[in-house]
Image (tube, rainbow, N blue to C red; front, side, top):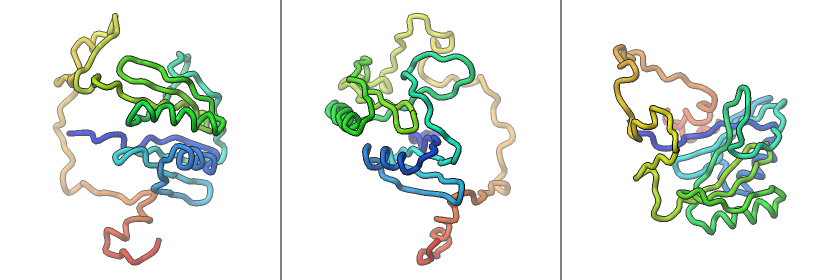
Length: 200
């Protein structure tokens, strides 16, 4: 099995117009798919040729209070921030200037050793980071554990360790591999059925 990237991150907003203005018009991420009906929307923006970020619009969602990226919290918690890669160091400065010109506070460039990053928040209060990989340092090719007191399992190394999970003994039979149409299929399934000329 080989993963190809983040197909999409799914976030939530109470204001799809503000979200489009920020992600499409300010950051330049194309709006490539929009699903919806009264009371529900699900829009997808292109991060890269492999990766998307999506937003559900629900009427009772309110922006969260901005949280400092990486600051510890207590109690139930799921998500801290998301970082988007950029091609070069100049992109960080260009993004910083664009964000600040549009009224979104942004940090200066931070040196994390293997990446340089800037930090901001979108209109929904979502903590976002933009990162440029430092030239000559690639932790994917040469993993590095800099934790002075790593957890026990981290000491086993970067590669997946087999034998800790049950083996598949009852794979899904071919006869049961049914794909069920779900939200969005109504927009595209006619192409697969040879009805390219129909509008949905």
